[in-house]
Amino acid sequence: MTTHHLQTLTDTQRHHARLLWDFHQMGHQARPVDVAIGLGSHDLGVAGHCAQLYRAGLFPTLVFSGGNSPTTRARFPRGEAVHYREHALTLGVPDSAILVEPHATNTGQNITRSRQLLTEAGIHPGTLLLVSKPYMERRSYATARKLWPEAEIICASEPLELDDYLKAIGDDRLVLDMLVGDLQRLIEYPKRGFAITQDIPDDIHSAYESLITDGFTSRLITP
Image (cartoon, rainbow, N blue to C red; front, top):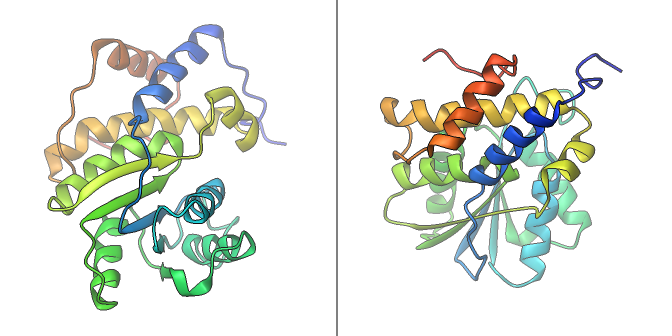
């Protein structure tokens, strides 16, 4: 066990983390769409939630997108999308419903490469369901709205509270680093043309700054 796993959060850190956790989620109501895209990450729960939504009849076609990153290479050596597909198959999603995009290394590529794959398959969706980690919903929405503006975007994630997610991942520091890193990307990526601009409420920005001061910085990018 590493020292990261032994991280003990203060009550204030946990409160600030919950503020970011709730803000990162869009609160969309899942409904039938043309296509769903499962965005690759270290979280296999994304594939599981995709399978659940498929079995509920919300979409006929499911794209899994993702290659590898430093945080997923050890867990998913064949790539995020490949492992997601394998997991979804065990949960009852037919192979005929799944398309695999195994090369994307960031959210922008998840969107653009999935769109290209769907076009090559003769599929031109007007509505998309983006399925991600809970704290990645807002960033994936902002990215897709920028890169696929003509599509209607709905976001979904496994319905978990922060404390349950921390237990499931087993690494409090990693999760808080990710919460902070995704918030920074919501601020910085519109300046780089990667995403649409979204308002960041004052309390969210204050919580973000406090967690940076407390050292949850491993996922920050250079502004």
